[in-house]
Amino acid sequence: MKRIGMQTLQFASIVRTISQATNRSLAGTRVFVASDFQEVQPDNFEVAAAEWGLRLVHDEAESTSCPIILHSTYAQVDGTSMAYSQTGMSFAQPLTAQENIDRARAGMPVVSYLSDELKKSGILRGERIAISLIIEPKTAVLALELQEAGADVAIYATAAEVNQDIANELSLHSIRVFANENWTPVQEHEAALALLDELKPTIIIDDGASFARLAQLERPELMKNIKGVAEETTSGIRAFEAMEKDGALTFPVIASNDSMLKTGFDNVHGTGESCVTTFLSIMGDSYVERNTGVAVIGFGPVGRGFARRMRTLGYRVVIVERNATVALTAQYEGFEIMPLADAVRSCNCVISATGVVHTIDLETLQSLSDGTVVGVIGGISNEIALDDLTALTHQHIAPSVPVTPLDLGNDSTALLLASGDGMNYTVSGGNPIEIMDLSFAVQLNAVQMLAENHEELGARVIRMDTTIDETIARSALYARGAQIDEPSEAEIDWTRTRFSDGLQREGAEH
Image (cartoon, rainbow, N blue to C red; front, side, top):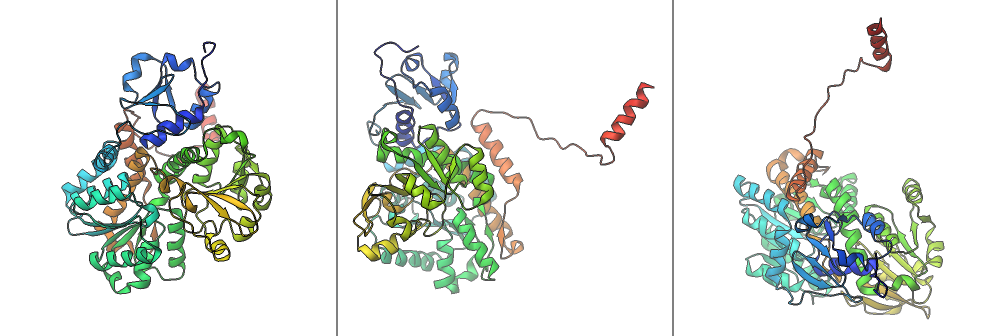
């Protein structure tokens, strides 16, 4: 029961504080609710927590097994206290780059287990692995584990996708780093080619198919070395499938993105949760009070994870979706469905979650009301048509800026989030550690497949066997203290029907 005079906390403040400060996943996590928290908890807390995926614990005897403990004015996460605030917070003593990497490694037990197996097998000795991913602590763990397993590793990222402190720390560990937060697009291009020329990779871990396509288009002489690519994203798989259809694919591509542990966890919970809490850190926990609606374009795993959490926080969410079956799914989950033109008139916040170039095209941009918030979750280059718009307005969009007033070229201005890039990794810490443990476990399996079986795989896009997902998921459950029954395979007697069963029962009765 709340005591008179106690100020009620906002659910948004609780999840943003913990998520943004720790890069921990709240979904799936055991959270102990202390007695003093119950005096100030939001009225909708139990329902909101369940929708978000928090596993609430009220028995004090179990509190020691909960990594998160909620109190009235602060939370404890792995023993570290942090006060709730309206504007975000950080640890009292900022972590060094190495401490951030160590914290990520401690939260990635499945990756550690699989890496140990790779080290024992020696299968990666002599492999040259190019990683083209966002450079942050979890990616650093992946790079270091591959190096420790015997591979020669180099890593690349664009200026908007690099945590420079982490990049510098990786260089100290003899990882070749091709990334700088101050590079221009020309320098980014030159650096990508330099990595290819120096490393001559045998395996590529790619994000958006950009790096592998660069190799094929501008360094075709290196393609004879390529055993294959492990692709991280939906947009990348689309590009590789287009190459395969045109007969241009000359190497196997493991569709890591299509693993259930990627789409069902990384996209729905990882990107969905971290983009919402990043949005809150930019716009404020009380933005809901002046928001007329959030139009989410695309109801795939990323859009769905974002939309459901925004609705949990009290936002009116409108879904824009071209696929009729997916749109119907969204409607049955309680969302409004509108065409894009109607949605941008109805809402003063527009978020793209498609991974498709020019999802928000120039015409749509110029139809926005003055002051409309516009952003991308997930994201590829120019998902918002900033190339077309800036060609008209000549505005320079600086990278990695939380909010940029965007000249729409018609006397109106929008508010551009995260410079039009994926907001959670551009101006925040990216997907949570526990989620990336699953995603990078999938990537390690993909790398192993390419190293062991590239000659048999053929030049095609390949979906991973579901048994790999099952093995990783069981390891993740075990690491998190859960146990389940072993699977069983029932023998199917196809001759047995309801009719034969009925006749057998009748015969037995007589």
